[in-house]
Image 1 (cartoon, rainbow, N blue to C red):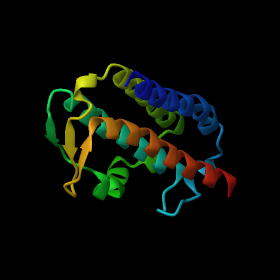
Image 2 (cartoon, rainbow, N blue to C red):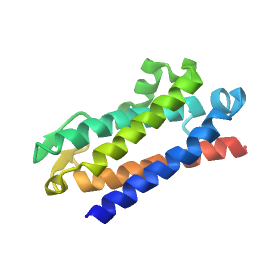
Image 3 (cartoon, rainbow, N blue to C red):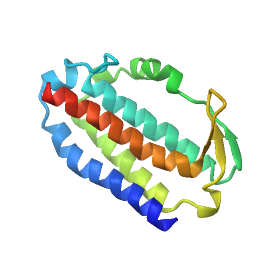
Image 4 (tube, rainbow, N blue to C red):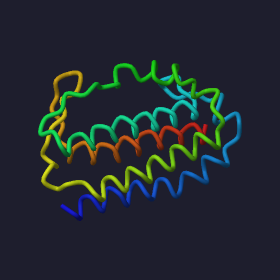
Length: 156
């Protein structure tokens, strides 16, 4: 189990290390004007990743002391979250730092997860049961997905 957790945290750490510098070097056009298939700018994608870290942080902590967790899902409201927080007008270096440090904290949390809780389950808004282990793996996959979207915007 430790190997799985180490692989996940190493993956997160590598993304943060590589992408912090890349993100900070992007032009205003790339971060604020180019849009992906979901009509999101790089600022909005990064804001969404901060929301993901925030929501997953809550679930991962709570799942270590609840065998089953019914906790709000935000997937159906992603665009609402992005709009309410107005990531488009955020100060870019601050947004990048928040993303970086939230992910460094996620690494710390995952390193300290109680292995006995890895089969505890969260129920999403569709009723799907997700184990803590699946959530941890899914977090890294979700991070990779959106980093690829940013890479596509850079290369356009």
